[in-house]
Length: 164
Image (cartoon, rainbow, N blue to C red; front, side, top):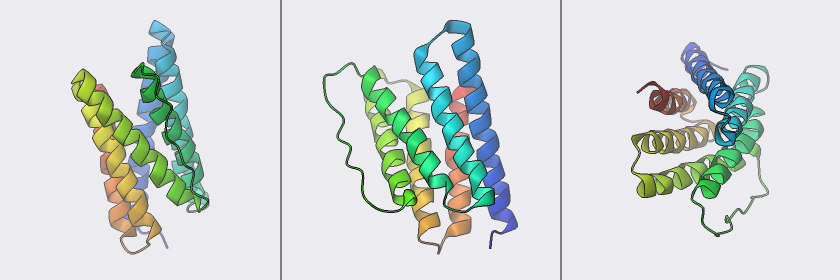
């Protein structure tokens, strides 16, 4: 059973990802940056996953996993290194895959922060790590409400990187 706090936290996450999606697509239209287009697509997929949580809990993890994978791969591309990404897809539920890819995207973003020292990358990386942790809390079903709150906080931190 989803509590009111969980619903509010999920709604905050949806609004934050919708703003990030809109801002990315708007930026793409203004400067024709393929990076912004891919980021917009990734967050659109993540937002669809969050929306599907209202219909079928845990179905959204599959959407979120794809979105986080796109973010992680984008940062590997931006590093301009000839390293092939190490991606091992576990043969388990979508939540575990979502944790894996969101953690992967967060780590890649923090590695990119080390190279660029841009606050935006630090905020996005931190937000992705928090989202990964929140998915874990939701999966173990013991800290579900706290998981939704941490998820909303993670997306708000990512959104704050656009506002500054």
